[in-house]
Image 1: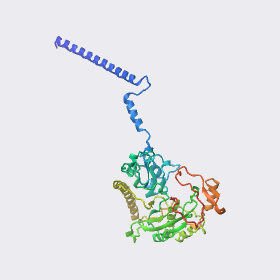
Image 2: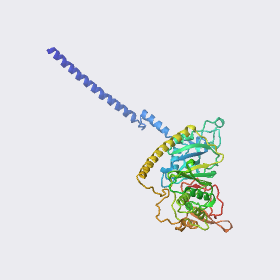
Image 3: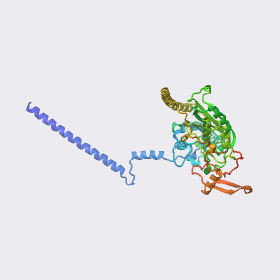
Length: 477
């Protein structure tokens, strides 16, 4: 290589190093300028430590967090009908010791959608309180929800100082209550439809009847005997021996009217079948129900179906003069029970066909999974029977274990009497005694649950077994 070429290469290398040095200096200067710019914008004399961009972001965030002005919107008293699978919940009503209830999820959705401001001012009533593990196809609540109807309408309350021009303007379509709530509720809780109702309308006190269904397999039960026994529940009776007496909450009157009671095959065309896996349903319709009443009624039917008790045991337990104290027995389990219908007169339910199909699709998915699992287990049972396995005739629908030597109900130890329970809660301050008319004595509700703010606080009197039951009694199971 010639000396001239070598000299030229060295010159180029020197030039390259010079360029690199210049680029490095410019990069450091740029960083210094950027840092200085940040310092100048962040450390202002007025103490504002945010630059323009961050101020804009914070402004948007502050705007989003601005309180929603419920006073600028009409309120509408509506009825909501909902279905839920209660197997994963600790009951319908809110409880102090758990938030895993259907009602808790429902109010979370109502607050999230800003349909209500708070429960305490929502004018809320429920039709019934289903127990832990119990499902519903037609539970109904009434509540005041945010509305778009400035022009008024059934159940609408306008905000104060509404401009006359706004009031006379044609109302927009109502908020899509069903769709709004179903988009934020769990999949096993679904709103079916809604209805506008008068301001004084109550899901609890205006319900005309409630229908429960309890599903069970035939097994070794005498279902014809059970059907005969179920008819004995019909009419107006004192059910203190066929429920859990909820005296501590002021339930002191146990007469209830049962409109119909039946035991029928789920598929009527299979009525002559003797298959132990065939499903039946105990359906009962009444004006109102007591705490655990349906599960106690079903427990007695299961004892009768096993021929451990005669159908006459129902008549004997309904005779509170001869049997004033409830014999100790276990209830039927919770998961087969469904609050199937709550009937109201004059309510025009509004359905959204798209939402109905959406709910139907969700239920079909639940059914597919459950049906397939059922047949997987059933196939295993058949396989064991095929190799000589003997099926048990044990009834799996009663809580607790079955005694080897059955003891008839009327020979068992009894629970406390109604009067004894009343005295117990009077001493604890939960109930109060007062002298009533004609020197009679009335018992009044004392302390109340923090969740019962919407329940009427009228005094409840201890009544005789001959007193007539009002259709306004609280429905519970």
